[in-house]
Amino acid sequence: MKKIAVILVAHGEAETESFFENFSMIRHTLAHAGEVMKLPRPLQLVASLAGGMKNKVTFRAQKYRSPQNRITRQQASQLQEKLNRVVMPDQINFEVYSAFHATPPFVKDIVEQTSGHDLQLLVSMSPIDNRLTSGNPQRLSARCLPINGQRCPVVVHGFWKDAGLRQVYLDHVFSYGKTNGSALVLAFHGTLVKDTKGDVPMFHTGLKEMQEMGSTLRNAILIDPRNGYDRIEIAYLNHDVGGTWTKPSLAESLKALSSKGARDVDIFSCGYFSDGTETILYAQKEAAASSVKSIRFLPCINDSEAFADFLAEKVATVVAAESP
Image: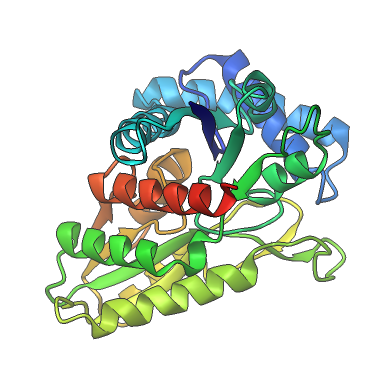
């Protein structure tokens, strides 16, 4: 029986208030970012120390725990069940793993652990392709050294242009959203558009993919007969390192909607496959500072049954294409 390892590759977040866990997560995050941005190592260390302490205090005060890693594990469990039930169960044994860039278990460790499988799939758990999402597993695959005929891992990505995912998103929005004359903000993880010198970044930022996905999804919602939103805007959850980031930020978008008289706003973080600190703590902090009367956050697609079905179909299609 053929053994196939399916590895869900997510960013990863600290799951407790522990200083050391948060320090390590931030350290790995900045190390990855430092591969493409000008972030001197001393700065990375200082930022990791400060961020680890800040998270410890904030998470304890707000009794917050990031659900991202837990959700990714749930996504892996769902996918495992669906694949082994419907995709040639007598011929293929799927083993589905969750792995992370910034927290254990790390992607490279799971790739090494499953090196004896007949096929390894690295599923980028971000709808947007860029150097720091799908780019990392692609680089990992490119560096592999096939032994005894073993193949390099296959990276599954390109979700930003997938019509199947778009339909999952549409049904999700109309399942959770108000759609009764309110406004909807589609939120993405922002990206660098100019470095500290004012130059366009030399790495793949994913800006074009975000713009196309946002525009296509926005238009699809507007023409859907279930739609009742008066306005649909696109905004970005940005960081403050490396230069100038995408606009409008979520805060800027909410301010503009308020000035146009919007009183009720739904926010859907469509640029993420799972909720985490950015979509919960950071986004809610920006929303709390807004003058919009009522703001609701729709959950990410997380471990929804529809998303699990979509992933299973996507993986099955790739496996069929890769089979001799």
